[in-house]
Length: 250
Image 1 (cartoon, rainbow, N blue to C red):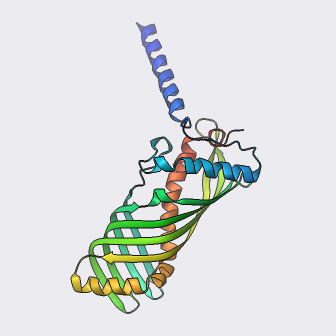
Image 2 (image 1 turned 180 degrees about the horizontal axis):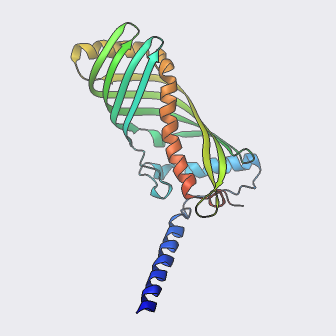
Image 3 (image 1 turned 45 degrees about the horizontal axis):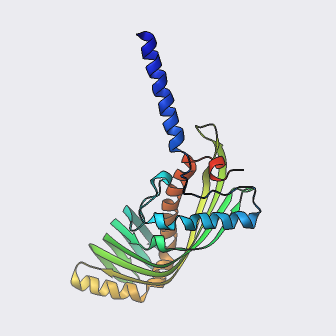
């Protein structure tokens, strides 16, 4: 009886290990790139691999911990700007962003000697809905309100730059971890609409849409921080799940 119990325990451990190992295998529909390719070939290979995933991005890729991105749902994002002409605290909840899977991947740069990654993307059009809570002032205009908000952004160019480090994971394999992540962006045009108190929202909508470049410029650090947090969470999970040998085999 004792031997049978030990056998069952060992079998369970083996099964759990096998399932864990299988779970962390790169899905077959992902084209992996050999790390020994020439730099330009590696960059192009990874770029094509990402583009091949575009049809799957709308519904998400659970194996890569990528959430559905049509729309991308974010429970909450907060911005705080208390210097310069804008003194504003705003919180957005129940956020839905549409158009993220329709990106154009302009370039990929990888330097494995420095563990450096950079992606440049163009989003022709992004549309966002969210519940908002705003308090503060824009220039001399006091603002305070809550309700539903809508945003439309066109020609959004985004550059994400990652500096990584190699560590030994629990699987005894080398993994990347993110040491530094920065995001930069430009927006061709932006339009906002805030529902709520009619008189306040009419004034606020006109002011914001007339001065959107100033507002984006002042809030750029906060927006970059929010974008970096989202990208870092997704990329960090992929690096945690898959070793370097699986992501970029020799």
